[in-house]
Image (cartoon, rainbow, N blue to C red; front, side, top):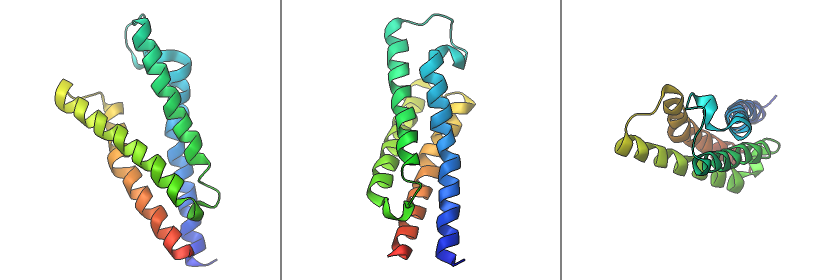
Length: 133
């Protein structure tokens, strides 16, 4: 197996594992609302609606990343668009931290995923795409 093929397979595996986060968290959040995060049993309807809407987008983002896995070396534009959406969300989360205060550990891990892991995956995908040409 060539180095490119091994690296491509490894990238596909890492992206598949990373997709488990939005698929799992997004799915649970759509189904259960913000209460599953330990918030009061009843939240205002508008907050619940917004939370589930954004969670649906997060779930959809995970599904869209999954479509990049086959032939990942040819999905640069899609992968980068999705990655930039994640980074934009991470920057918004960082702004919340600065304005409102530190979030819980789970959200801090999300921030690391959004502002560190995803940009690294974007650069890795670009490298694999360059090597495949």
